[in-house]
Image (cartoon, rainbow, N blue to C red):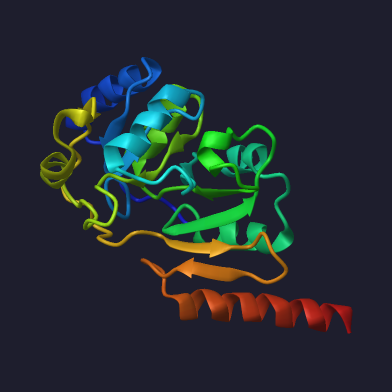
Length: 220
């Protein structure tokens, strides 16, 4: 599993505490990640999640991704974690890969938009990890921008798009990733890359091909 090399600067610790407090009050907050700024609410706060749809002007039939702090939280959200998903997790997470898997019954319909899958990611950034651990649950990890507009890489860019509609913005400086995560759906018979982002599709496809070749050799 990839390692997070950065620690939380002391100047950010108070902001993180305020962010957690806002989440616990059913608020929505923006925060830096290893890719772009995220817009989040706790998974157990449906009114806050509804606000995210409204603030982003996002269609209600579009599911929301979730950020988690570890693989255990993934196992609580996914109905099953097949071997290929575990290998992708081990290879790329924490990092810029979002994995779509069959959702467990614990995932609210407002997150899945009534569908049967859930998109999850472990970010390689200490701020969202601290927020998740402080709240005690996964948080929504959608990009902090208006739907169809460029992703925000700074707190200023978040404010310019969303303004006072967000309860709190954790200002962690510019996001070094600069690109949204790559999304792969492993819920069907074959893995499908739904969006190419920070990790090139070709790299992931090569990794999956290697996994399948090794599995074939073991069965031979």
